[in-house]
Amino acid sequence: MANQILEDIRKKIKNGNVITRLIIVNAAVFLLISLFRILLLFLGSSNGFTLFVNEFIANLTLSLSFKGLLYKPWTLITYMFVHVELMHLFWNMITLFWFGQILMNFTDSKKIIPLYILGGLMGGIITVVLINTIPMFSVYIGLPLLGASAGVTAIIIAAATLVPNFQMNLMFVGPVKLIYVALFVLFIDVLSVASYSNVGGNLAHLGGALMGYVFILQLKKGKDLSKGMNRFFNWVLALFNSKPKSKLHVVHKRPISDEEYNFNRKATQQQIDAILDKISKSGYDSLTNSEKDILFNASKK
Image (cartoon, rainbow, N blue to C red):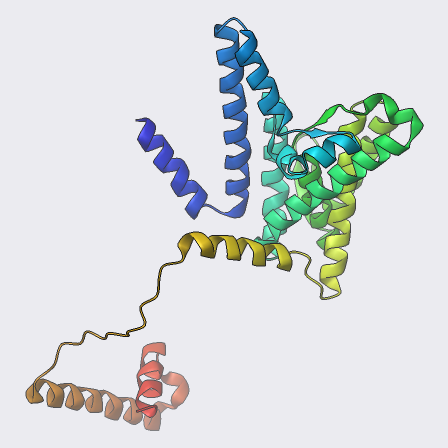
């Protein structure tokens, strides 16, 4: 049964769209952390295992300090896939699904994952810089930053920048333009920073929002900020999918008899004659796509 579940997940990651893949990765990391925490509960919080779990989570979350970022630079990527609370994961993933689908309907799906990562990077960097340079935020230095919110906010703002007049049907409200939804999200984040409520998270949201806006602004000018990351992804995939190429090119083709050759040639000529006759009677536009293909292929011989 476990093998079947793993196989289903593998197929979803391989064949699902980019939003599905992001959701599965976030959910998988959450389940792994939850499993460790459950084991910690049953094992009675033994010192060795407690240290392991705490170090495992600490090596995935982003420490809001220059020192933490310097010693663990990979956390600038990993933090955006880490959740330890179910509702935090749920709301991030449902928002990612809603707004990711909108953005994907109006642009290339290959832009979703790069934008998510770029939004997370911008959110993480801006948060670390502001927390460590603004005196009133100094109490947050060294605290962990985690969650997909910065990347998701980048996708929300990108969608609203690209199609501001697109209408969403909100429960108890009705149809609302996407631009107003995005402005409300930004308004809440600014208020939350001002009220010292989840300062690190809200600063990361604003950093992600900035990236989402810049991403679409540059795209409208003809500059695709996702190209470099997509080239990197393709290079990595090529490393895993590459197979040694043979220098010999062998073509296996069954020889046919003279009778078969003449029969095929006659049948093909009859098809062409019938198509030409149809053109003379009804014109070229009366041909089906398959008839046009036959005529085109014959013209190349």
